[in-house]
Amino acid sequence: MASWTIAGVQMDCRLGDKAGNLTAIRERLAIAAKRGAKLIVFPECALTGYCFQSKEEALPFAEALPGPSTALLAEDCKRLGVWAAVGLLEHRASDNALFNACALVGPAGQLHVYRKIHLPFLGVDRFTTPGDRPFEIHDLGGLRVGMTICYDGSFPEAARCLMLQGADLVILPTNWPTGAVSTVKYLIQARALENLIYFLAVNRVGTEGGFRFIGQSRAVDVNGDLLDMASENDEEIILATIDPARARQKRIVHAAGEYELDRIRHRRPEMYGALVEPVYRPAVNDGSKPLSRKGP
Image (cartoon, rainbow, N blue to C red; front, side, top):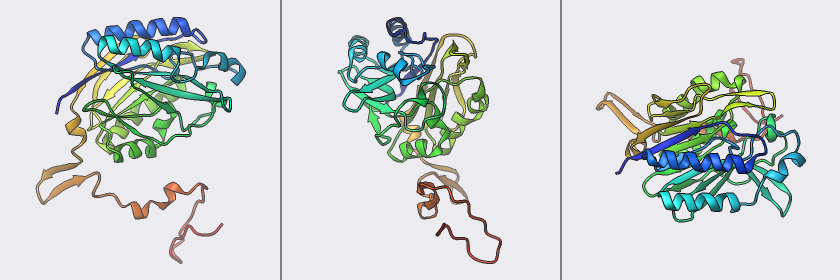
């Protein structure tokens, strides 16, 4: 199975300056392609900026998908022979919905769209519509990719759903501000390790709306080791070469018949019912009776 070179473009962007941001994205797309990358990932809301103060302020900078920006990116991807994943705001006119989205654009005009499912009370996410499509996998021609956005990474169910559908790589365009230091340090490596998949988290830098964004984009191996990592403040491109076959081998044999691990076969779904209950109901077992989650 052929290896893939992937790139994360850590960059600054200007709030509401779609034309300027798109120019910067296209320039960096070409640079990453020249360095050998076949999949190039940009930060969350790289096209539009993130720290809008209302839905009304953000809507003029959103666009339908497909739209004019993805059309230009599709031309670039065709010329360069690459895939690009770009964060932006999507507008659905039928119900005036506003989504925090990631557009995955391919060299043959492919367009896949992911809408952020988990929304924090922060930036434009205070006014966006929760994603209404399930997690899904996209085969880029030998590399199976799942998309998430920023806060989605804090929910292990997201990466697990994508792994169970066959993801080799999960991408995470993000806007990590100063309050996300622990997320940067620990979360992505854990998601990669617990699922035995590659992870590419791409953050932005600069300041916007009173928030400073802390960079440190990272590509992570299936065993949780860093393959490449960006600095905290600078615009830069990280690169990693990954082997999809490694992500598809969930059975790890340290000593045959004595020390074996299997991330698929050793699961116990029948014990995970609480994960899909819509209401949080803490239950405490004092030892006097079996623990039950039924009832109020």
